[in-house]
Image 1 (cartoon, rainbow, N blue to C red):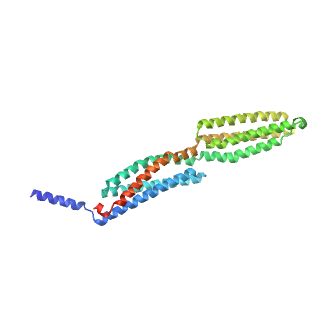
Image 2 (tube, rainbow, N blue to C red; image 1 turned 90 degrees about the vertical axis):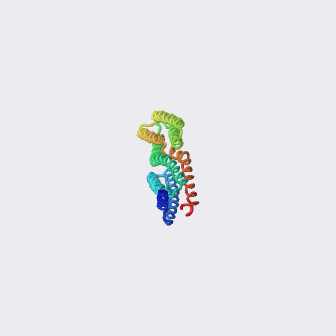
Image 3 (cartoon, rainbow, N blue to C red; image 1 turned 135 degrees about the vertical axis):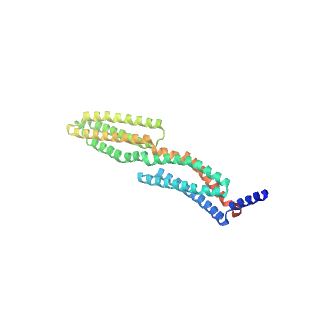
Length: 288
């Protein structure tokens, strides 16, 4: 009698655990759909993040960074939805793949957050704009002010004055020429070397301005004063460029994107492909 009762109880439990075929099939379809969307959203977040790093305006960087964050939220939503479905179907291998992806994506997300924070600051891009805009304008104004200087004794000092003016302009152009490599340089030591070179040129310009002032006519004093002011403005802008360049947010975000992030992304993609492949091999009979 007891044996019959136990047998009946086990049979009832087994029947209770059997799901209707249409429910099982729907769960399998849901799992496949969610895993496909996971891959799609991961591709979206990776693409948007890369565009944020490569964007040439602050507005574009911010827009793409937001797109990356939205795709990241969609990934988290898909994972939260697919986990219980796979568990309910009893797919232990696929459950392990989801857990593996979660671990990898946590690392990817932390790194990507850091990359996006750097990318939207755009310090290298801002430095470049200063170099090509205000710094270029100040350098050109400096040249025009100096070229208007007339020596007190043109017959005696005319050629010397021209040589000094050319030397001053050449050193300003040399400082300008160091802007671009400084902005693109990832090494602090190399940036320091470039800054020392710019400082030497600045000293040379100031010394040359004193020599030119000693030759200038009284009517050219205002041009000397203007040139000195132009150069001070140029130096001030160069200091801003160096400060922004030293932060190196664009260079650092690009280096992380092309290095560590690429490795983490490949691992995430591998897990997602394995998850999709695993679910694609499951058929209706395997779920019964």
